[in-house]
Image (cartoon, rainbow, N blue to C red; front, side):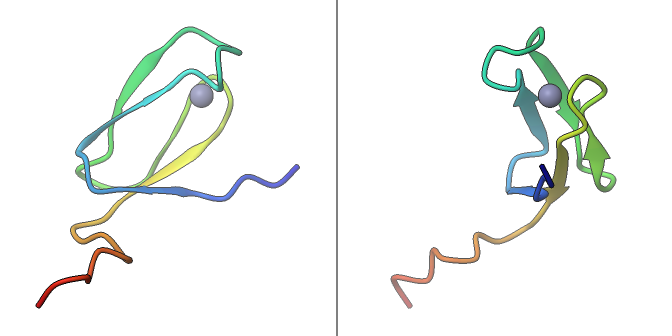
Length: 55
Ligand SMILES: [Zn+2]
């Protein structure tokens, strides 16, 4: 199973792998990080890709 990086506009993300491991928080402000338990990667973005409903 290949895991796609999760994009987040939050500097702190949480991961529990749907309860598969203890809930942890990861600071991704300085760059991509991977969960130490499940390996899920997170990417910090400054804008939401699909939130351009108003201009
Ligand atoms: Zn995880």
